[in-house]
Amino acid sequence: MHPVDLPFDLILLQDPDESRHPLSTAPLLQRMAGGSRLMVGDVFTEQEVLADVGPDRTALLYPSDQCPPLSVEQARSQIDTVVVLDGTWRKARRLLLLNPWLAHLPRLALTPDSPSLYLRKSPRADGLSTLEAVLTLADDWQPGQDFRSGADVLRRMEELQRAHQQGPNTPR
Image 1 (cartoon, rainbow, N blue to C red):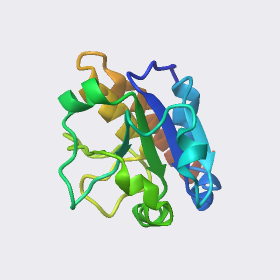
Image 2 (image 1 turned 30 degrees about the horizontal axis):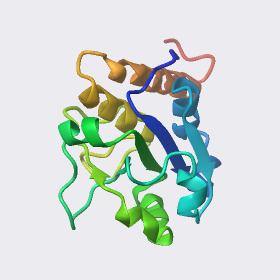
Image 3 (image 1 turned 180 degrees about the vertical axis):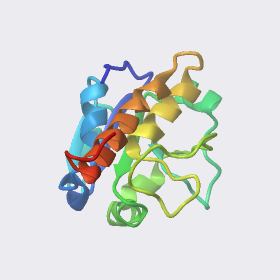
């Protein structure tokens, strides 16, 4: 796993159940992206999450039906910090509902050009793991930097999982 220097500051709000899941990608992402913050809980205040950065130049990476998301070009000039909700889609939506101040942040959304590499599958065709979503956003933000190659750790996780399921005596 190689360290990455994201083009934005990153704050991860993680559902407590997700924090106990052995295949959670948020801890991997936090280790990869120096300076990122991982906060575990159900309810967060705007003050505790954004105390160091403020809401003015912060966006939430989460799709919205109510308002169009910022384009990457807009984000590059207007946003310094990205907040990401980590958990299953159901748990991420729950975090959004429990923290209504998040609804006031501008939104960023992704349109992935390839399916997820993650072992845990999403009910959404465009669903990505937290790690993949952040690296995809960074790749869109700074084209040519190849942030997505950081998701190769997910391929390795899948190989290890497959080897573990096959057992020690199964030829590979």
